[in-house]
Length: 315
Picture (cartoon, rainbow, N blue to C red):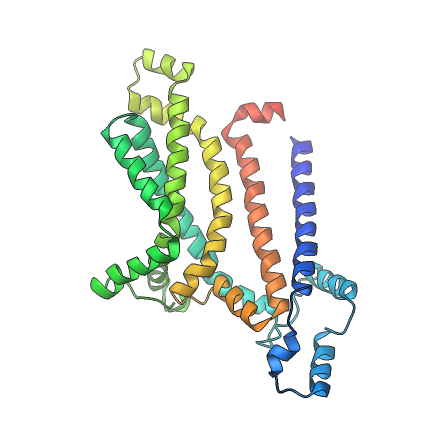
């Protein structure tokens, strides 16, 4: 068990190191001059050179990489070229929106998938099963940004239940903040819920055909009782795997959805920083997202051991 945990932590650290190298190399070879973007095409050469020196752009790439990494280890992400404030403060303010949005989307997706997947599995090859599969096929096919626009037309412009965009800030209260995230979270969650529903259905059907479930039914348990008490937990391992992978997709999806709903989150910050060639912000945001994704996958690996005791004994 301890050896497995050490192996996972070492893999986490090596993956993160590789991501920092790749992110730095990709961003450094991109065309464009951040100093020229900040000052405009009419800037004088001596002014451009002074700004490049101020931003450290005249140093060798290796020097810039190690300075960036040493800053990360100290908790210093540098200063944004565009906003002239510490990148850590900029990211921290945006994470207050993106993380709740991703968590709310995951909760909606998991809740829908478990209910619909178990419903379809309990009615395998019947009308209910076919209906759920048809709905999930539609959910997979709909792009999240297009669904977000439809939700705005229906719930904001027609029914006027929610605002069409923007964020009031958490200082306005918990409910106003969550209310502003409901539509974008639903737009992100529908496609993920459709995929996860199919995984839940297939996994539960496979477990229901196992001998231990037949034995439980032979002892007098109803199909619903056998499903809740025995089948669900054993069917969760592939489901947990997909949930971990989907969390990374949700974070990536916030880049589009936050622009559709005008949310000042991390996704919109990435979009703005790319347009402004703010390399310091882009590098740190990419690494932060990578840390979140690989940490979630590490947690998923450890959850396997909690869900299935056989894995603990094997490890």
